[in-house]
Image (cartoon, rainbow, N blue to C red):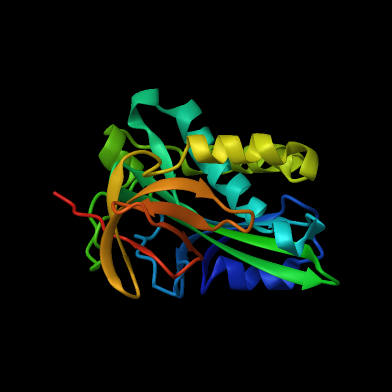
Length: 241
């Protein structure tokens, strides 16, 4: 479903939870678009992909991070098939989309829980497509047009991401857990090397060592200490040129 303008496609989707899996709401402009931490999302009218998808996964609540994994993969793997492989689109844990050290997109997942299972999953995606100038104080935005030098078809990308997302739902069960995690890890930003982070105690350098069962970010510091972080407990320090 397409609507010219709305406050938030995720918020609007709550009125459409009875729709079939794969139902989506796309818009040219959001007046109250937001990201994972409640931050506003800058998007020039009609230039980017602003969409929410609906899934009905019936997934045990303890495994809900798998929804973040298939969503990130749906985006980066689709981009990988549409553009030259040397662009190296990555997933910044838990579910931002990055090109090098710049943010190409963000994902906001909202789950409806019933009797210990995720009954309905609303996946909001904001992906910078054709915007050429960013005026907010966001530190590191980038668009596909800035990266590739070409104008992309928003609807074509939307449909391709949707189809791939639906195909990836087949990996949500326990039988495919290893494959799903392997593919997610292969596409992670900062999967290799020593990088700077910040937690409640200050900044430090560490290398990534794994993803926990609940999606925790696991690192080993320069001093050899292994640490585990949940969402909002650790910040990636990114120095843009």
